Image (cartoon, rainbow, N blue to C red; front, side, top):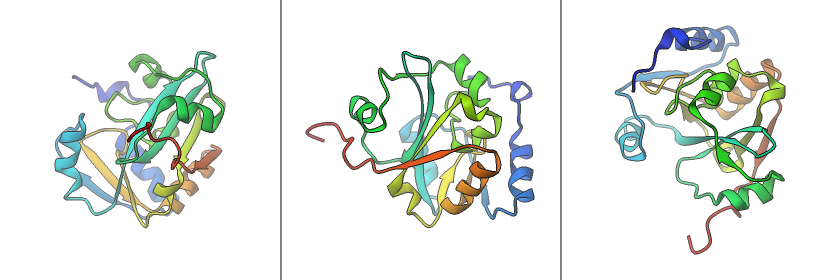
Length: 177
């Protein structure tokens, strides 16, 4: 997959400068591009933080959701819909992902809300993930990872004017799993 970084509304470097300007402490790691869970697991072991995954979802009524959770939290989308009062989730297309969050597939991250208008995205963060000391996310591209505190993630979101819902995902696991 050829991702043209010049088409991104915000570069990873501009994002990192934004974090610096907010006085947010983070660690930056460079690694090979990761797209699958297996590829991510090779990189995760070298980065000491709570690892996450992200889902860019859309409802039939065209509401966009960014759901960020622990990498190992199982999710039944129907149960998630009921939990957050949404209807008929599907995964957002790569075009909609670029239009809404300014990133390519494989690079979805809560940090991509730097490119989003608050009225165009609903942000859901898993409570368990937010209790970690340090969390790991891609800084707009899947060849890098940053680690930072959940409090600093919220500071970043707040500075951008995004409202965030922190939700307990303990009841969204698939039945029998």
